[in-house]
Image (cartoon, rainbow over all chains, first blue to last red; front, side):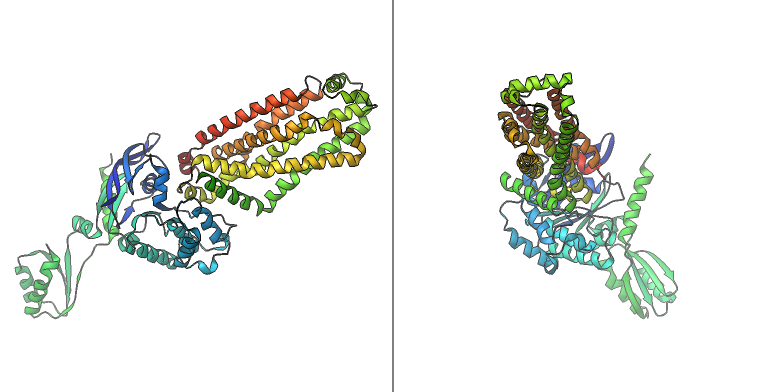
Length: 309
Length: 270
């Protein structure tokens, strides 16, 4: 069941289109990563879907609420983590959350605040002023704020931007945990490794949608599937045996390493390994040459640049 | 729910206001400074130029109008009518207090929220624009109204201690009460609503303050009109002015809600 349905969503600021004709669906419990270079329209998309700004045209339904007509009820159903956490620095963490909790109906604020401060590991420092918090702590507190009212859908805008590796990893672990609870998460990020680690599907945008699929399918779409076999000593018997296999599309030899392009690596790999062993090869290692997501992303952006007039 | 949300904003704004020493000082000390300074000028004017002032044409006109409005003035001697004329201007000076407090507090309200990044998170909650603006306006308006009333009481006490106790009855006229309990709340609401408009439209607090300045000029105009004898604020005109201001307040609240463009604030302010 789709929790987010976006149809031809467009946002123009004056003559300039920040987002154009964006259509996508996000299923319940899915983590969708939105990737794109600076100014690609990621934050604008999140702001439209979170009911902060109105689209110029197109429509979107988020958690059964039509945008932009049903904003108040939409805000009861979604949580937004903005790029900059934004708190009242002179207030304690508890007081900050208490203030934001005060806008939601039907929540037991003290119970929810305690639950999420504990989940974020901030309970012990709940009475400290937020101004004394580190960036990572502020991000975790912002995540707690976004979750106070148990939203069905979470919009996370650059949740790890500007954090040190340890703090970023902590936030990523929390996102994984939230995803594990079955929440639908719309994650906007620059970090390709993060997108790959956390997201079920990835949307690449640059004003309009360039690609939307799982990391696995995107790889298959843009790059050949290659298996690399490292043997102790490579001779012609081994290479001939591999060449004879019908499913081998292409083969490359470099030192004691065979790079073999296959149609369906999952199915063909055992037979390939068997052929090498039967030809007397002593295998050191076998692995798939996975193109990093970064390569796919850069390829998409380069193609888009080339297609621009 | 609206009442709960407005109260939530109100309490947060008070916490922000009163945990900042500078802002607290403005709310508490500024009213006394304004009135104290004015009282000093009155004392200087009466003691060093009171008799001469009675001979100046514009003041004679003003005192003639004052005698019509407050018949007891006719029985006063020396510079006392001039003193009553000046003391009665405090009815209008007191109206400056909420305006000055608004300029120094509420104008920072939305600008600060935007600059700290908390506004976008706030706008992602179910709060309605009018609830947000009213909460912010009331949070400043209530303490300034209370301070104005407190200062009015202190003013009466001080003029008694300065030896002008016999004139207190000529200051506490029906216009004085109308001004304190109708005009002051109306001006307070107007100042704070304009402050909120300024704060939501301007890119920094200074520009927002300029919008509130709009209220000060008519007030000084009124004082000038009274002191120069052009006209005198009687019960009926004070009542009419109060009603007019309350209507303006309502219109300004509607305008404030319309002018508060969430999108423009979120997207354009950096």
